[in-house]
Amino acid sequence: MSHWHRYSLVCIQFVDLRTVITELIMNLLPEKRKSTKISEKEELFLQNLFSNGGYVVAAAESAGYTKGSAGYLRSKLSNEIISRSKNLLASASVKATNKLISLIDSPQIERGDDLRFKAAESLLNRVGLGKEETHNHNVQALHGVVLLPAKKGVISG
Image (cartoon, rainbow, N blue to C red; front, side):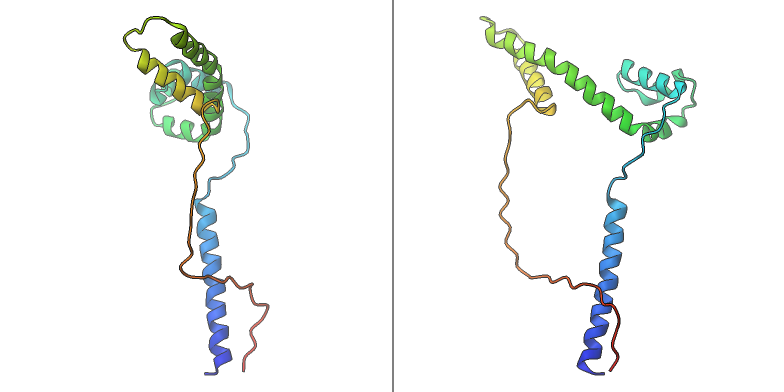
């Protein structure tokens, strides 16, 4: 077997491996779901979910679904649940801001103020109003990897 032929086989195997790895990675990435219209019953489920403190099974049952539907509903409506949670956090950020200000202005320290402060700080961090953190990543490559473009055809010797 000639040197060129061995090189061609290695390149073909590399391209196949690259294709397999790409497909694996694409299957692991989260899917962007298309927004679908929410039915009245699903809307009732969402309202129940946010009013009962996040108990999915109870929210499903009170909306007229079976217990077994809870996981399906949570999965199907996950984007809407996340969106509404963000809105809820955003509206609570005003309360957190006011609590921080009142804790700062208060001449007396009361029991539990440290927990209230941490809770308010955490909420403000989650909505993007907290301190900014930067991370330095120093990476040193030990081995070089060269990705070759796919071959258009194999020349046999």
